[in-house]
Image (tube, rainbow over all chains, first blue to last red; front, side):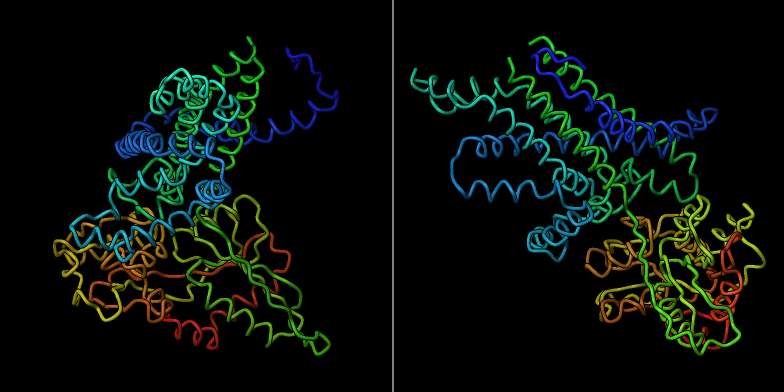
Length: 266
Length: 272
């Protein structure tokens, strides 16, 4: 609990901190305790489980990719442009952070559903979104992108724009400044943003169920499979939940250890 | 570099938000609770008084809310509270000690889970039945008249997944008709199926007659012969450890009485 920067935490701080940690850790450990280890491998390697896991990893990766391509520019705009409209735009873009995912699903349905304005136009041109894997990726991108945007924006704000201004006085064009100064300096934020976005996409449930439906191999991701298995076979549900926990811990753990280590060195 | 320490703190904070988001994200079903208060208890007759909590299947929400207030009106001094959710969710809650006095299930399988765990005292009589119907858009634009029409190519059909009760019923009617449906989605609950038809995402869905009736003019229902081969039976029972067994028994009896049957039949349920 010692801090290298020299500021001492109040003596009582560890008490609520430990309680907070236990509150998260105890339920997860309790669930691990319920896993039936004798049948764990068989349950987890069942075809429907592997299909759901594969679909989840694939769609979460695709959603993270799309969120990066669309979210990085958003983060740069939010951190650099000074206008009160940016504040409004940020609030709207970050809305999925606080919306219940099922509401996100209803919103996507309203826009991209068969009778929605965008979905109706696409349907007239022979493109069907509903009940496809693309709908899963859209639902995941919708709920996960704000995590990426806020993480990257945070790291861009910390650095300020001094180096960018110096680079442009030295003759670098805006695009060159973006790729050689801004993005490299935001790499830690980008890395953690990507990880958070991927983890959130992996756990997406409500928007997917509402917007994409649930069909094995097409739209039934691991969280949906867990929810379905819970109806009949709680053992399978718990085993699959553990797989999801392990993937999430590995993904989040990798970056937080890296960031934590770097913070300690500085 | 203190900036990196701050970056780490930001990351930690966002991780916390992520975890919070995940937990809310998995809360797919909610429970709705309705309360009705009794009228003045001064005129209370010999019958049981007090409060009970009835755990009832989501499909019973409208009828049981009505039955509850009817019962309270007829039995001053009583309060009947409800918790509505999917039958299997309610079973899990009761198994984990939720304070239920009466359990009304949408199928016999879920009631059996509780009787096997010795969590029901006494018998579990059936009080209603329900059969499947094809829900279609108002006016039936795709001209669907029977189960066979649902196999037409290009038609977006949605059903329940096999593990849930309405999905098991769907499999039975498929077998009875000797055909295989190719749904574009196998939903978690009958309300999800209905929602996909109501919103125009799907052309047709297999739901219960009572769901079609409950949806009013948002969907039309198409009956089909094979539905007879998958009649869903709703049992009711008193939960062991109920704090008010007399009232729990009295309400269960009321559900099965002529008055109860009238309310259930109006909603589209069949007699047991």
